[in-house]
Length: 528
View 1 (tube, helix red, strand yellow):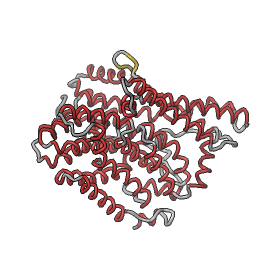
View 2 (spheres, rainbow, N blue to C red):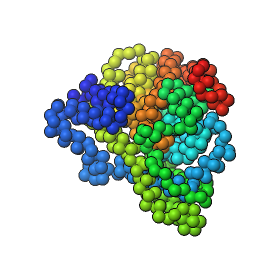
View 3 (tube, rainbow, N blue to C red):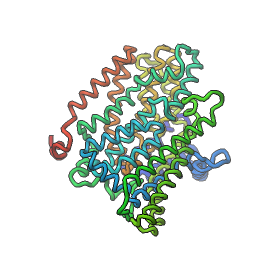
View 4 (cartoon, rainbow, N blue to C red):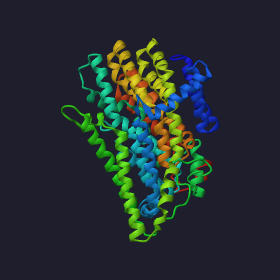
């Protein structure tokens, strides 16, 4: 069943079920069982063994603790606890009141999230969770739905990381490009130069970033997002509490009456400084020879850095809690245990989804779903002008099916290089750009993607609400980007392709945009 059309069944089954039932764990579990059955050739005993081995692999790999997954789980728990104590210390309340005086419109609240998503580009996991923690009090106060915030986070984090050379993504991609250039004897440009030339060709990443601002400034509400925004604007209900919401504190915690903005800012600042500082330190420690910023980022230990930053942020949050409880008497000290418990509980829904997603991704990898899809491209005899367009679609399908953009990079980038070198070497960079763009697109649409899960967690949105509300925007952005890849394939002109993408985005904004909701009610918008 490996590397055949049957390898597509488990991811497609899981995704179809999650769209129909909206029950993420049930759907992922079904996909897991289906994948294990195919791998075991429908032998029940072996099926259970394969599932058990995949679960074990989350915690133990090559006879040692799997620190990658364990550190992410630990970081989520730390972030939940930090959030709880920021709330108890009165930081969230004070920050919301402070922001209300400065950010006075729904558009402004959305733009805060968009700009923070662009500025915090060092890593997508960190971006998704940090931007959510900072922006959520502002968007809540301005009656912006959590689904909209999750969209803003998701559509700025990965798109920025994939075009920034100074990021964990950029370092990984530059390293891959270097091996591809060396394999085909390309010496006209370095791996870094190639990456920078690819950036303006990554039409999906650029269009996704522009689309966020179009949606915020032109009040573009499409599909399920209309429902969430109408409820938020008319009733002030930013999230449906009847659904599981990762990162949301379930019980009302007591809040200090003497809390200040600093009770939120300082723990988050410690989290940021601790994470970035550890990334630099771990990367520098692993570099052999002359250290450059790109080599440091290529070798950094992101998950270890997240945990270190989380521990530092928690330490600061606890110090501020003690100050509020002991010195200022703004809150009772005996709430410490409840804060710890509620912080952990708030992150459990996200952790459950992540665990299931990791298992199905592992099994899909064993079924070689990605290799099957890439083999279709490699064996096809197509007009080379269609190569960027086709690679964009295949990378999107692969990332959507497997839930991983990085995995799609690793499989498809070398294949794209081989095809371009064998047919028309001038198509090398557009082909690589198409793979990067398609992988981010597929990742945006996939309910089993870890970055999608963490974006909903950071925003405090129900996961499937985020997936379904983001999907129309991602599809429209992808359609516009696909036209760009057709243009660059047939003309070879990056400028012409970019111009077409920008014109299509402008037309979309003009046709579907309307006045901000501060000027008229959302019901009036929907009636138009």
